[in-house]
Length: 510
Image 1: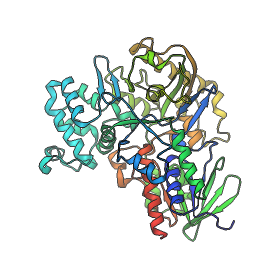
Image 2: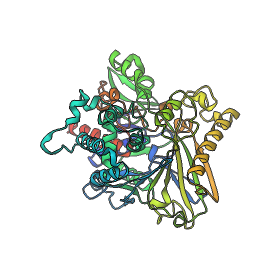
Image 3: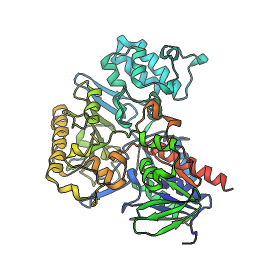
Image 4: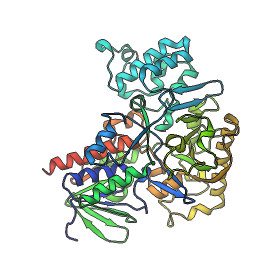
């Protein structure tokens, strides 16, 4: 086909949509190709019983106050009137229940420090050193520019794990679990997680935790509108089979149906391993890049229970907070079970209650009903779910869903999670009128992510920042955005990558 588009974007995840929207605002004509029947990737929503919109990946985001990243970007794109940020409880946007302690995480570094010291009065020095170090990593240098902890660590912070920082400040076992309770937001345990990603995520929420009025739908619809009004297009049910490389340059894509589309720029929001090893082909990569991509480790995936209860949110007696249930001080063991391909015996459960965060939007739940999700880390191996290969590799992507062994594994994980909830919050789950679960295979089926992860590459020191995928790849004309890039995962990281890549492309093209 003759060139009709300035850029072809593979995948309509939030990074791809952001890049396409910025390009469209800059006068370019992008084409977004999505293999699913809904746009948005992990920011998409799905509807059940004609009553409930469930968000796939939007649970809360930080830095949405005046002048914050998200409001500023919405202004730049012209959708600020369409995307409203609703603050969560500033005195405890995360509520973490341990066997012998309940800890509420407040907004603001100083309040966070004070609350930690009230809970652990004998560990004030460890808390001070930890907070000061995290703030330094996040870009808030201590007075005088001194950071004593850096000398104790004996290496740059970018090479340190969170666990090494805990060792350096001499934090107790219980304190470590409180400090690391939010590690599920990037799916890596303290002994593996980069302290950098932990600091950046924590700092973002210290600026305030927010939800989007109406869930992820307004954000996705706003980005699609900007793309289409700028002359671009979002095409669904259009799976890209390969990236066309001619003369060592990416010049277009070929769809699963054989159709070829060409453009001067190809921008992939797809999984990095699938982009390079399958769509481009290892033979077209330098040996260094091929080895890097093959060696990348993906973050652990999630198991999610989507639920609706005939309970008015006011009956729950809770503020706008997330709830983390930690039935034992065994975080490393939980991760180890998942890495080994075993379902955790007593999983840690994260509960996101959309109806508490946004009680006014009836698309989330009508009056008198509560929309919520229960999440836990889970093993990526298909064998853990009773099948031999993931849906992205199977001839029929959805064929596994009714396999007895798969159904049994899925029900077992549901049972274990609900048992933990009942033990730690008796009677909380009641009058359920809708319940369904998504395994890592579900995620892989809809997004084609390697291992069914929602987080991209695992955030370890050897896969942090510049060790990840660059926006502009070694193949001329091929760019990357999304969770596998230097900006990391989540709506914040993916939108940052989309804006940065589109800005660089516009600058190069004058």
